[in-house]
Amino acid sequence: MTDRKAELAENLARVEERIAAACAAAGRPREDVTLIVVTKTYPASDVRILHGLGVRDVAENRDQDAAPKAAACADLDLTWHFVGQLQTNKVRSVVGYADVVQSVDRLKLVSSLSAAAERDGRGLGCLIQVALDAEAGGRGDRGGVAPDGIEELAAAIDAAPGLRLDGLMTVAPLVGAYAGRQRAAFDRLMVLSTALRATRPAANMVSAGMSADLEDAIAAGATHVRVGTAVLGVRPKLG
Picture 1: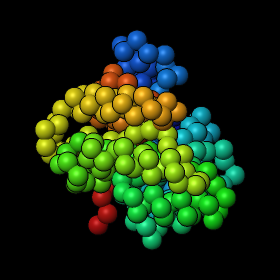
Picture 2: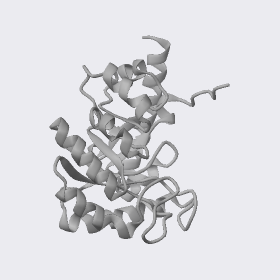
Picture 3: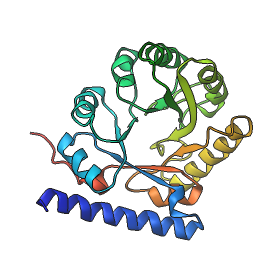
Picture 4: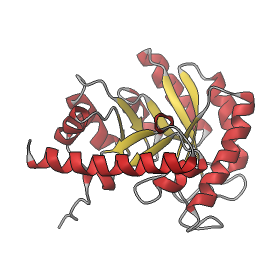
């Protein structure tokens, strides 16, 4: 076993223990929660090692990093999630490899994703990114739509060829009423998810929680957690 494989295996096992313990504490089966490993800034060789260790869901937040990495790993059975703020001029590239876009937060992006998915003959899963720090009718500092904008986006995705509404995503806010209150933020997301599922029961994916707060997300009911640093380590700063 190489040093890097041993390091990733140890980190992955530690994260798995945390997820299992959080599920047990919440009275949830372990299989209720999917681990998505966020591999941003790390090389395709790490993705290959992770695949060998059993990881099947990976995420990226920058197309310029993700596109070549996905191409280099095209032979692996992976589900690729795009989790970053997405500009429309990157949509065609992202649709070429992503299975799920977790950061849908405006109507223009819905139409661009639909056009690209139709052109490529692909079915693309979409999560509406909810900004819990946004004022009504606005968007958050880290992307996302205010809660009052969910229904409009959901209806647009429902009507868009090539797109499938899978659920909701959030990033714990750094400002506003939920700053420093991750559990409360994730509880709020679950309330919004319950309302969405009342009319769209298949949109049952709830993506929340990262390395520092995955336990809070699982306690609230998240179905997917996005973990980078705890698996891959802290990347040294450049320069």
